[in-house]
Image 1 (cartoon, protein in one colour):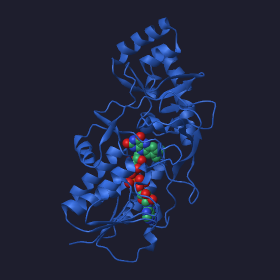
Image 2 (tube, helix red, strand yellow):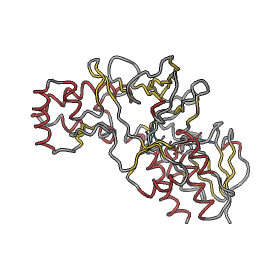
Image 3 (cartoon, helix red, strand yellow):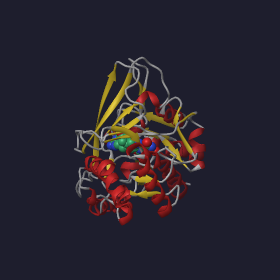
Length: 367
Ligand SMILES: Cc1cc2nc3c(=O)[nH]c(=O)nc-3n(C[C@H](O)[C@H](O)[C@H](O)COP(=O)(O)OP(=O)(O)OC[C@H]3O[C@@H](n4cnc5c(N)ncnc54)[C@H](O)[C@@H]3O)c2cc1C
């Protein structure tokens, strides 16, 4: 029987611990330097209002992967939830992603119906067209430019601290125009918020006789030897940044309690223009919680600075991925050491993809 150390009690670490404990019947020590489990998906009940707060930003679970959905559903019930965000355009709060509903919210009926017809005849109803692609089409240049200016350009610049043309296409693709009246942000088959919160879900995943969890514990404090170390922290930090630091974008969440029942009409409102922040999230909507007060978080993008703030989004350009590869190659020289998760792989994963990645890792490396 092998001994296992998992560094990081986030979703990736917890899912892997449960597989090792359950399927291999081996013991696992899971450590985290934070004072709580669940990593980036940690949520907690605000004492004053009893509203569940997503501490590190709004998290909506959505997937088409039935295996992932069924696995997580063993550990939580769900509040079936469809994200229907809004965006402020020219002072009006309208539907996001920019879709056919939005056309009628921002333009006259005549203009909206002309555009609707052109979009449907060019791309087909139901198509999702990345904004930069739409911009290449001369017939639709006006609407492309309108969306680009009002929804995409400044939001993306604020989010990444970059000009839009410096941004990796995979990031741009995440901001589509949706040729549909379906106002849901995601169309995945399974969507929801854990009914008792993400932290409770992770706690349930970690509940196993073979799993021990130690919080407030940094990997550097561990002196015991393990057959396997699976490190879900930042790969550059593990190697003491010997090739240099991997850059990330960070966020600052200004969490405020407001003395009124609702602050905005939906869970997330984006502010592409006019302000330093990018979006405001009103947390009571996730679980439809009732309170005479409400809690919002105002999201300010910023650079990641070691020791000052959290790593949020890896900046996936060629230079940074080449740097990541150096660390990855280095890690492969060490027997029994593996890297996993959004920080270990230096990759943005939605929650379902993080779980999928753990399943694949387990099947390939440990089974
Ligand atoms: C702002 C934001 C919003 C998001 N929204 C969504 C969403 O709506 N839907 C969706 O599907 N996904 C969303 N995601 C993605 C989601 O957060 C990730 O998929 C998930 O958190 C990945 O979990 P992880 O375990 O890989 O990483 P993490 O949750 O970061 O876990 C890593 C853990 O390792 C610990 N650790 C690191 N180094 C050490 C060390 N040296 N010693 C001890 N412990 C250490 C950390 O404290 C942390 O707890 C969002 C991400 C961000 C940044």
